[in-house]
Length: 414
Image 1 (cartoon, rainbow, N blue to C red):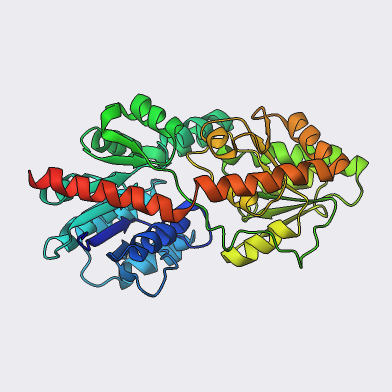
Image 2: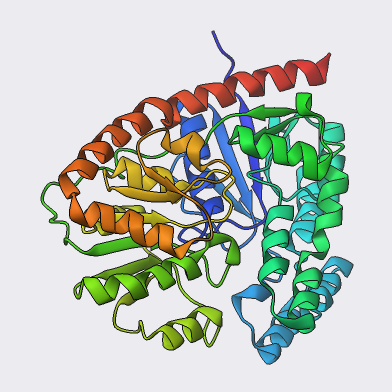
């Protein structure tokens, strides 16, 4: 009989409605709990949405990215009782354009875990110095969805001017720490073969230290909704705020061509643009104010409803470590146009139109193909849902994690 494990999963931030980290924390903790294990999620803010059987332990820092007001950030610091050196470091690093959360969370987690007793500890990509101290005392697994060096590369590539380049360099100042730490981690999990190769190359991690376990899709929530009618020229995509890596610009340029041929064409973006940022300016320049709608803070059920209302899903990313929107669109049987990059082909198989990245014309043609022959691509999408059910279900993935957890514990105690 298998021993029930006491598991801690660490995450420096776990936004439930934005980005993949919060989704991952919800699903992996749910899967391991479903196998009979006791799971604590130890997270910095924003905090994840978890099932009731998973305990959330809040490990807050200053949470300075809850606002971009200098005055409000100063007030946050001043109101903090018993300020530590890490609090001062977090404040001044953020003030100077850095992103200190992974490092400071790692220190807090290291201190917190000393009196606690867990069979195994999993860290969700902080890759901070504190993780090395935790690894020395506990069976430990690091999750790297993809190396952040890829985000850094595209941020620099699309930066305009010296000031913006310097800003991006400062923001990614945590990257050298992650590279140093990754090389010393003994057990790493990543969700795709592509990410495994990239971690090996960019972070100089031995391939034998990296295990591939894909992420899963909740196909009970992300599923076709027969009662919801798809609008014939409605397109859906997901994009983080003004992040070049997601390739939203190319989808917006494709929309310019589409609206001249299909007057009812509209784009729903799951995400929000930065106020007065690049995306808002581009929308104004392209004259797309009426054709593009942003929706944010949606539940999984609400996102599934948006897919059901749409005739086409687009994933225009320039890079994806896994790509939850790809699997979610396919699970909803929504015809998909996606870039043929990184891990995306590993997820789609032959059940999507794969196109060149960074190419608005290719996105336009892919969408137009679906508009012109919806029955053909709906049949492909239905097969795609079955592909996701068979290959990316959390029950099977949870068992793969469980096997690795037991193996890691045994090797630590030997």
